[in-house]
Amino acid sequence: MTLVSELTSSSSSQVDSAPFFVRGKVVEGADQIHRSRDLGVDFATPKLDFDALVHPRTELPPLLKVPLAEIIDFLAEAGQKLLAPDNPHVDACIERMAKVSLQPRKAVEFMVRNSAEYLDLKPLRELVEQNFPNPKALDEWVPHTDHQGRRSFIRAYPPRLIHVLPGNAPAQGIRSIAQSALVKSVSLFKMASADPFSTVAFLRTMAEVDPDHPVVRSMSAIYWRGGDDSVERVLYRPQYFDKLVAWGGGDAITNVMKYIGPGFQLVSFDPKTSISMVGKEAFASDETMREAAEFNARDVAMANQEATSPWPTRKPASAAASRSSRRRPSRPTTIAKSSPSASGSIAWARAPRARSTRSCATRSTCCG
View 1: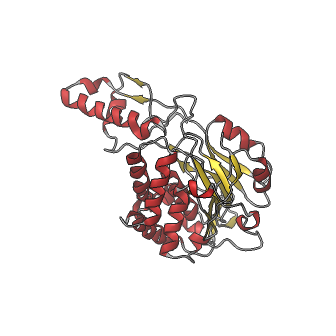
View 2: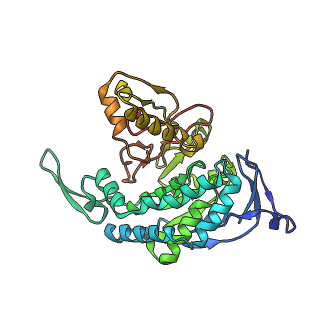
View 3: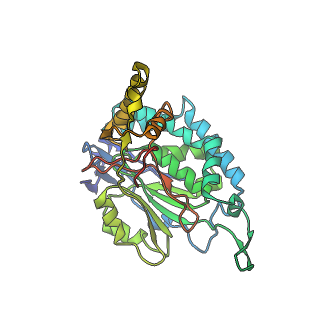
């Protein structure tokens, strides 16, 4: 369980600081001390300012009139900034995350630095094209004629989203930022105690590209203990947000479901169960056996079994399954894909593994 208490001045220097990022501004402070879930490491955060976290509905979303092409260009530029070897925010994030994560420091550094791949121009454009039949609806009113010949106009309006991020996949923070920006949402990210650093580091890097950019002013990242009713009963309300995008195991999803109701919907990335299959053709030669063994090893060892990864490996006779395995990329990626939500927000992301069971979602055979 994550613990929280007031910090005294004598203890504040003994823990790492986990600043907030609120609508384009960095908020420093050591008003509260929390304890990480996995290793019991203390970290300090500022107090929550609820008024600052909520974007008034009387104001238009900052990204509403920003062309999608400009948003994509900004994200790509921020991705290059993340890759810079002298990025102080990323460097500090890696050092602090290595203390709270179950992953080895080298694995943490790899995941944080490689998260910039989600901000490449090509995958950003593909993501929009795969999720929206007519991406123009993100920028303007698009004419539509139904089967009865009635004409209307359609436009995607920016949603207000709360994201409950996973603690076992640092790259999911930048991926969620990118997807939120593509649908021009106003987003509040709740970081996990196992990773209260990376999402703020990503947003601070974006702010260095342009501190006044609407993408930056649309995003906030904070931490509170999951299940803290004094916080969640204030923020999880339809007058403030439209949807809750939640990652986690059964307990985490059950906790947030009690706040769901008319006007406040849940987009849930709860545990998925899948299998990875190796066909008999993999045993045709020493070369194919080595190839299949390498792919299997990479899948099983991915993220040190702390994130999504296949567990049992079965051997079907299907040649199609074997061909699917051989076509997988050199660095396998496990995903779960679902269609866009009703508000137009992209619900497409990595499926978290339940800590009590072996669960996964693989590209070749997704069961969820």
